[in-house]
Image 1 (cartoon, rainbow, N blue to C red):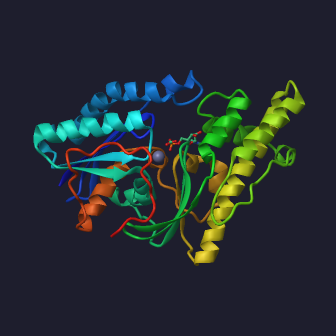
Image 2 (cartoon, rainbow, N blue to C red):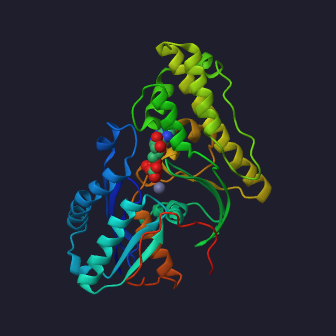
Image 3 (cartoon, rainbow, N blue to C red):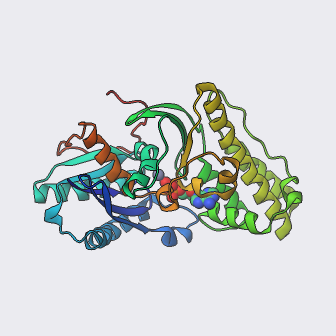
Length: 338
Ligand code: KG4
Ligand code: ZN
């Protein structure tokens, strides 16, 4: 079956094509709006939805060309219903509904975070090895920081999540205070990797919030960084590098602590990390046994939505959504009924 998938949960217009009978990914297009957003220092929801209006048709054309097929070849459409930005999601859901209606083909509405959880299995579409169930999954992006135990195909439980900022958001806010532009996560990562030495790591003791269960909190870190920058007055480049280094250490430590705790308490050896923050080199170094999807599949993409539809099909649970389906920005990702 040829599945065409769309994800517009945030500021990337993503379209992918998967052939579930061949278990092959035939197109995987991501049109990023990051250049438009960087001048605003973050994602502006209204602009993101307008960019999707322009970006989606281009991404669709590119995906069809790459997959060497036409719209009439598509058997099933899949689209992210939530969670995400309401305007962005609405563009994606409306677009897919219109395509499905025009072509008289079924469509499914899927959960973006659930798709991240199973994104390690994208490796199987390229004939590569994927991790074995069960695994502890950390989803850490600009919008989410959540921990799950994934027991089997489409079977998972939520363990905890951030009570305030997401890890990527914390990177971006720290970066903004240091004048690093948006998104600051990759900039901090690169800067620390290329310039920081042991002294930088030891300079500031930023807080690691102690939370109940498997929750996370990053708002205290942002405040601590703000107070430190104020205290320093005009911070030198070296001061800023030390702040970036210690803030990254605090975020990465908090993420790793909960992964290790869940692995130990639940007796699960395998861990996987996805979401944009999974690209972080320090995090990768501190979790040497963890599985990280390919970088382009850590960040938002539609390949994981196509894959999720393929997994539902495999389990005999792929459902066609009703025509009155709409975007659900706060769609939960807790265990669903089987
Ligand atoms: O998954 P993603 O592309 O989009 C969503 O937020 O949904 O994640 C983007 C977030 C941004 O906050 C960005 O700063 C962060 O992931 N990020 C990183 C790195 N690459 C992206 N944070 C730390 N280190 C990185 N290398
Ligand atoms: Zn995401």
